[in-house]
Structure formats: C-alpha cells, structure tokens
Image (tube, rainbow, N blue to C red):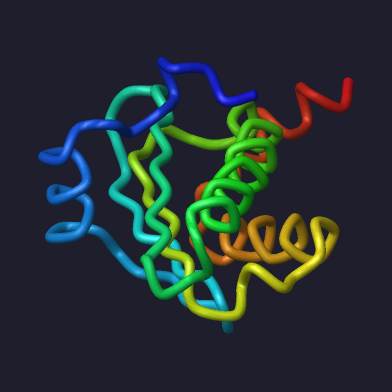
Length: 120
C-alpha cells in the first residue's frame, strides 16, 4: 500500500505537476512528472468520470497505488501524476504493472543505484 507520505493529495500539488510536468505517454495511461531535488517521491492519480462508475474508478486507483508502491524505493525524487484514459479499466493487473513500469523507465525516474541496492 502507498503510504500517505508518498501520496500527492492537495489540489495545488496536482496543478503544479500539470503546469510544470514533463509528460510520458502510453496507450491508455499518461505519466506527468517533475523531478525533485530531494529524495522524496510523491505520486497522484487522476481518473476521469468517463471511466466507468465510482466502483470501477476506485478499483483502478487501488491497483495503480499498489503498483506504484512497489516502485517507490527504486525511484529518484519526484512528484508525478498518472492520468488514466478510457479503456484502462479493462486492462489486466499484470498488463497494468508492465505499463506503469514502462512509463517509469521511459521517464528516467528509475534510479539504477537504488535498484542495485535492492537486489543485493
């Protein structure tokens, strides 16, 4: 589970990432990120009302939070927001995990030093 210290929760924080963030695109998911000078990692999730009903949106956010929590120790300091697009609710958990990993690697946020320390 993604702890509260790693969650992006304030409207102003989301707006900051939307205005200043660098986008990385995938078919059904977009990652906006702003590198940080500190090692803190904060992640937010945006799921539009066009994606199913509340139950479906909440399930998708829970899945994304669980996947992001796995990557937190390997990421360099940043603030990032995942923006879900229509059709993502039909993607399996394994495919969603691969998609999130692809976006983190493509953005360059995965810190190789932390990844090697984790393996050791």
